[in-house]
Image (tube, rainbow, N blue to C red):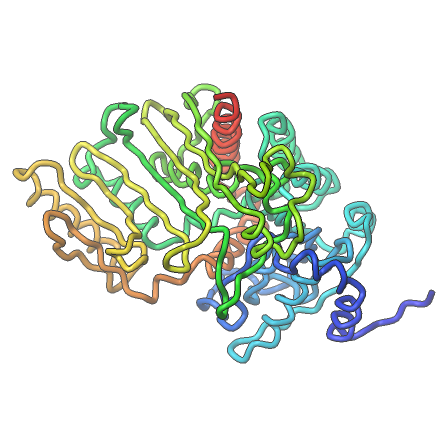
Length: 483
């Protein structure tokens, strides 16, 4: 058949008609749904200090989560406007194309992406045969993701992949192989760690690493860890008054992972990135995973139908189905030490948020002060940063040290300030720095492009710390499953 160029809008209309039956059963949302105004907001302006030639040519492979589209939420200098998409024809790819189209058609700073779409059940093989770009973008379908990463790297393609890269301890060797292949071939294999760009986390890191403010981490104590973090996500999210759907495969822990091996990846990354900035960790020597716990969130059949649109629990979930109740083992706790610092992390999925947002809590306990991010009703569910000096006799000196550190950051974050909050200090942060989770993707792409243009500039600690991170998540879940 001769090649026929078709308009993207006409393609979407025809493709939507072809899969309308399956779309009625499997919602178009991929893994999670973006914020209600995801497509309307262009995100903050980014300026890259680099050549604007198109040295990055993206290939989106099997998008099954909206994070794949967020990589393209903003046009970034250095990235070619034309992007290849390889995926089976179905709800996942249609959801991806819909988001890209909405980015292109938004009234404020629209994008100008052009897509070459290839729909085939053999998407990986056809992509590897054609290799129409030099950067493979991956998001979703977590269990099989590392195989696609390794195949892409073996073919000489760079990889920009959403977390998690692996969800099982038995795949750890495949992760090591992927990073070794990237090293041997001079490629960039980069994990999308958006939470490093959250403003409260950035300032928390600065304060924890100021000895005059923080001192050093308190001695190891399993009952009172030096680091405690808890991330609470929510299954049911409401957009424009309607439940935002999730596909049934989202609930298959063998396919998508448990809480710790998914969103918990960010928590482990932040703990190491904050405690040991610019330092390489050796998972064999520096980390001792002590134990893990897991517990389910119970979901009734009616609730499952509400969030997925499916008529019944799929057979893959049968081991955890009891009558009309499904035990979703999405909650984990892990306890471990990293270079002698005691850490406890919790990844939690509740059914519905009281505020329509997910929550983050992180406290670092030092010998001089604790530095804490809280996001409760008292903070109106907005992440806020507090410092609590240890000992009344030290508080004035610690307060002076906090003010000095914040003043040193004004050139980077103008407008941040220190204000009293009872016995604590509150770090006031202007709204312009609270750009949100979706905007952080442009910041990650910016970093990736710098490394792509100059591979030797990739920090030496990134790859060993990636191994350390996934060692904790997979080992923690492994231990939790045996208890």
